[in-house]
Image (cartoon, rainbow, N blue to C red; front, top):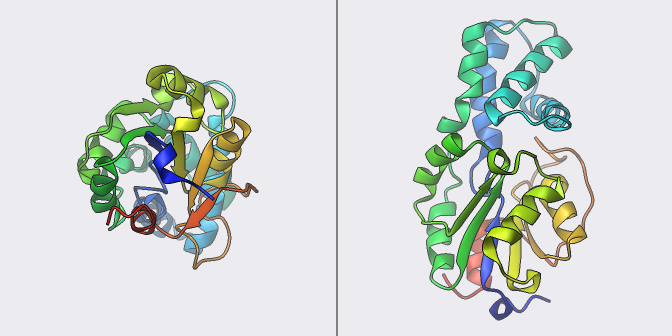
Length: 232
């Protein structure tokens, strides 16, 4: 059981946890698929996205805008179409339009009354700035893949966060949706974790590769976490 009073900082993944990236991905991807007459379900497209994104994020670091281009090119190779330069450009910048989950801003504002808040996200600095406007809270630390020059599940991103925050790990609670990107590395580092299982009423892993981890707490959304902490 978690004693919430033991923690000073909540660290968050952003995309999938605070920002509804699956809706954003599909909204940006669907017009290209339709224009090339590709018939594929949303769930299958998200699964392919997860596979291709993970491949693109391994090895040499590329900005996330380049990762998104690589994903769309990979989808074209898998599904038999060639995305146009305009489609590649649009998809690479689509994060700007990805919506926040309806509960994110209010819950973050409630959590901020008790804790310092940090972001540890697989994103570019400029793209996160657009998402931050939707979340309407001041984060105390923002650690991006662009700053770390690596993508989670790399432990490097977390080590950079620890260095910036300067706090012992037992004062940090990591809150995230992706078992693959966040729960597995966080547990390997000895962090306490909360799994925001946004897909609790859906099958499969969506836009993240399959993984197994044992978080201390599972909740369906961020508001539920804030309620359990007695802050809403």
